Image (cartoon, rainbow, N blue to C red; front, side, top):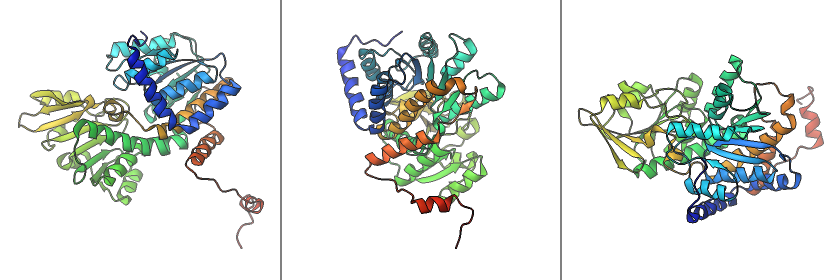
Amino acid sequence: MKHDIADPALAEAGALRVEWAGRRMPVLATVRERFRREQPLAGKRIAACLHVTAETANLMLALRAGGAEAVLCASNPLSTQDDVAAALVAEGIPVFAVRGEDADTYYSHIRAALETEPHVTMDDGADLVTVLLEERPCPDPIGSTEETTTGVIRLRAMAADGVLRFPVVAVNDSDTKHLFDNRHGTGQSSLDGILRATNILFAGKTVVVVGYGDCGVGVASRAAGLGARVAVVEVDPVRALSAAMEGHSVVTADEAARTGDVFVTVTGNLHVLRGEHFDVMKDGAILANAGHFDVELDLTELEKRAVQKRRIRHELDEWTMPDGRRILVVSEGRLVNLSAAEGHPADVMDMSFSNQALAAEWLVANGDDLDPQVHRLPEHLDAEVATIALEHLGGAVETLTSEQERYLSSWRQGT
């Protein structure tokens, strides 16, 4: 079902949010204006499975400006901003999403988006592509794009198993995505979600970051900046060493469980905090997940152990253990920055969604010549996004002299 826009006030409120976000997305505005002139997506249908936020709305408007017929469904049941969805529908862009939808509704919305038989799909977590490959509800698209690390991992597994039938651009692997969105976006917005749900003081707390990829680096950095002591749990020795050299303690999950005040999981893996960890956590320990899927906290085991559960604050559940200890879970273990807050700031999504728009254009132009594998967005497009973003921050890129170019291209270097 399409989003209900019976309440004009809802759509009006959403339109203001979209406008506000758009003011802080100058790179995407530049791409959108070029798209409007050149119409590179004319006649193409695009189905996007992304978080339904004000920033995503600006991407959808940019795609339409480029000539595409675009539809949107949600990539997470708790990330939809209903007023933004209503605003997009009022603009003539179909949206299949409502905040808090159950699993059946969630997948019915994905199928509804695929019923448009898109030429290009966009994903955040690879759920849309998975439904397309498993159920074959429509012809294969020219190609797809993927926004997040979890989705890229799934897609590479599909390619390795030989089931991926069309090319996918790993937007997540672009430097202007993962070095900024994952670090600066996830770092700030995850703590924002925890703060909105709990209103705790981070200073003096021990914050345990489980996973030290780009997103974990961002969470740890922002927590330390707020005065927290940071402990990192990591399975990769190089990343663990990096965390140690950044000044964080590096411990096992068993050790961290006994000392942590706030736990943030950001691994993309299954049950990284489990029953044996819940058994030894402090009274009042707070658990939040910043990974894409709600599988990192083993809440089934927590429910088995608890004697009571109650909603104590907005997006905060309190689980009471037999010995009286209370464990607090933010947003049912779902993606905390979008379920308890508003997601990444528009300033950083500007680069990520500019990459998405450029990836769609690149697929339309080149998709027929690409193998059914996971591809990286061409580096010159990544550099284009960075250059525009830097200009809007008041910076400028230095230019090599012809002498310097000759020197760098020669093997006769040195004095």
